[in-house]
Length: 286
Image (cartoon, rainbow, N blue to C red; front, side, top):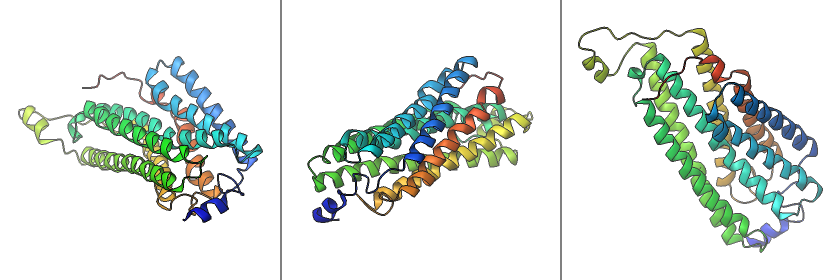
């Protein structure tokens, strides 16, 4: 899109549309309630890892939707536009980190000898991807949003491309997780422990932890949660691929259905299926 087309969009709003007030209020309430519950549950169940992950994701969503509601009254205010986009882009990274913690607990319960990686390596590898993705997206958003006041289209496009790189890193991490977790669940189902575990057992039978109801429910919840994050990340990848004021960026229903709804479902799910209740036995991560 050239500069003339870029500027021609601005009389509509910085968003390319006017944020729907009802949607903003609904999601603001839903995220606020879910985040407040996560705060209470984290304290009640002594799950401190929730604060830098799920809780932080909720705070980012609350700020983001508060700013969108603010924009409803004045769609040309730059600050709320900048803050909402930053918060909504970064939020899923924290939820993804929480899901990795939950997956590691499942691996420890069902048997780490079925996993292609030692449990602690999941935390190290995916924490690295989360940090890198967050940094790249932050830098890109800073470049792109910093150019909005001066309508510098070249700088905006440069920033958008950097953000796209950050989202691509996050998407790669998701695909890598899905591959490794799928490998683990298949090997557990077929009772195929790693060759290293078989050799170290010295001929003794390696016990397979059964699928008890709690672990099964937690595993299914994790799969659903990761699917929500994946759908949201694919949407954001498409949005950025089409560029500034592309089809997916200027159509609000995509944000509502593919981002907000997915994130609400993912957060509320962990209120209902809280890991502390479905994984009561404390396990050390090795």
